[in-house]
Length: 295
Image (cartoon, rainbow, N blue to C red; front, side, top):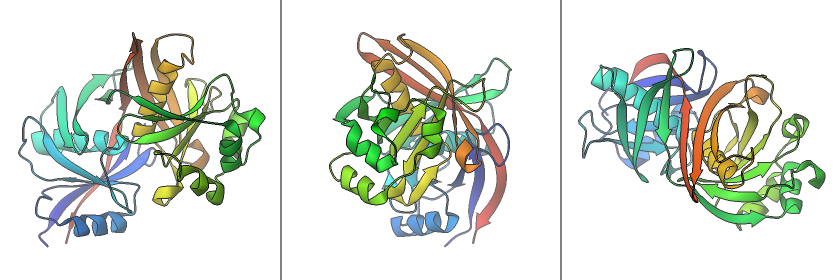
């Protein structure tokens, strides 16, 4: 195999060694699928992405995303991190928008600025779709919580913007912290659902500057917990808008994730519900950690 450049990034991170780690491999067009999967397992992050060519096609860059178990059609932090590499290592000039050609279609990633003037990358996600509503009893057994700790003002529901999640509203940070997946109960439940990952959230936070605390459990994919999940938080944004969680149709919030596993992450969510059409954007910062070559 030819030498391939690769990059290690922290995504949804305010600084190095926070957020969700990602490996991005360049010039990967000639690598067979089995080799991509082998590299992903060797990298041992939740996902590794492969940029097939430095030349755009139909206005976007062909990218494939793998977990250590399989290829996936879409994932949030790989999308942002890969766009960052394209912008800084391929284009090598400021670009307002970078388009990724993913399995689910073209996803644009746009550069923006927070109120403090620091770069934030934003990805516009697909229109959310809403699936199965799940009763509190089975999900409480999965999470090892009492049914009363689930916020029954809102449904436990499957939501997808390309990759489906089960969204679970909890009442308190204490409940979020104590949530622990019972694998037997989890696999029994997800046999009946399209979504194989569970996102729990509550309105209490560790950092008073944030609006929600989130945890994401990915046992089905061999990852007990993800420190920052752009696809899951995109589903959450759609859920918040549909159910009018904040009592309004337009949301601009900060979400913390990964605090319970010492990888504090920060995600920015913007969404608006206009006559049932929900627009979802997920933002975050990306930090370069290391560069190297695969031998």
